[in-house]
Image (cartoon, rainbow, N blue to C red):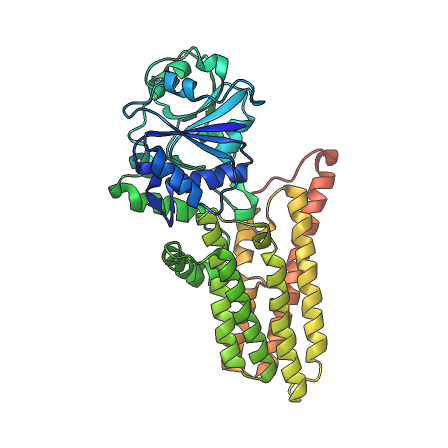
Length: 434
């Protein structure tokens, strides 16, 4: 679907968490699979320069000038691409920040359709205060999916024309408040966000909304209590640099394998320090990518590389223990640990495919278990704490026992889920998260 971005004034080039409002919107549209983009603006030279400087947007973008002053529906119609273009409809967006699910929802709607919000969270109201409301107190975003024939019937100020179409019920409605908000990858409900370019007093609130949406939930205990605040602080700093998420990932891997080398050489305390730093940085790259809309296929493979270096830590510790005669069976236990972790991953996949949700977020009990069952951060803290209280060999054995106990817990939980789905109500009822 072709897109027309309505840009009034210079606020579209204001920076928010490291990138301009326009750059953020173009990256979101690119991820959503949009087609050609036309930017209708009263500052064509500066906008065209900003588009040309962008190295991450590969959409075909055209910049078209418009007179300064209030935007009208007639001006949008005049800017509509030629009739010989194959797309009969267009997504028209006033410049602003839009969560990707909102773009998908408008693209999938029955055209013509308008994006409205009937229940904006109270803390977000300062960001949308300038937008008009309908008689039923629904906020008009100004974003629509519309065909040319419908647009030809509109006139006057753009937001007024959209509001009139909504109140006359001549256009379908896509209500932000009614859209599904559970995101399995984030293990949480995230209300889709949208707002216009924030004014200086609103900048901090806008940053807080984006940073909150980039934070995964249902974390293990060390990540929730210690890592998350540090990660957010690092991301706030990195967004204003040229450091990319992939560069953070590469640096994290260097540190991780440095920890492996230290463990193998018997320098367990320095290795633990590097492992702890790795745990923090491993959350930074993904959060930075989500905040700056820089997710890449390479980034999606990160979990596989994470698993490799995590397993290398415990194999290295086992090698050191065997080499120094502290634990004759350490390598066998390390292989058992790897097998247990692979089994846990398989069980998580079964649960996700069965329920459509992460195993860690199915119920309050699952969320509590996520905090303490075997994960990289939990293992590192268990190992470090046990080393203070006992010998490295016993600390290593404790980590293996923790992994096996975690496997048993996952096995019981997934077995219950599969049984519930297959046998409840003669196999017709789906498992319902508590």
